Image (cartoon, rainbow, N blue to C red; front, side, top):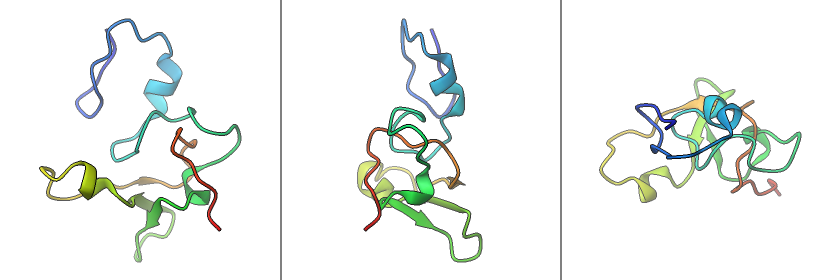
Length: 87
């Protein structure tokens, strides 16, 4: 079983790389999106004003209303399956 304090416990999950690269606040597992893309290039990434290379998932609060503050993560994280090109 693989899991950490901030990720769902997944029985039988075999891709430890994706799991280890996923940061708290990401919408889904890192590396599950388009190859070579990062969170910074996604329209769902909301950079912090004071730390532009860090940010959060734009709709985190809607998905996790019981969490008071959306955790921040690095914008250079490998894109997840919800990646959508910033247009």
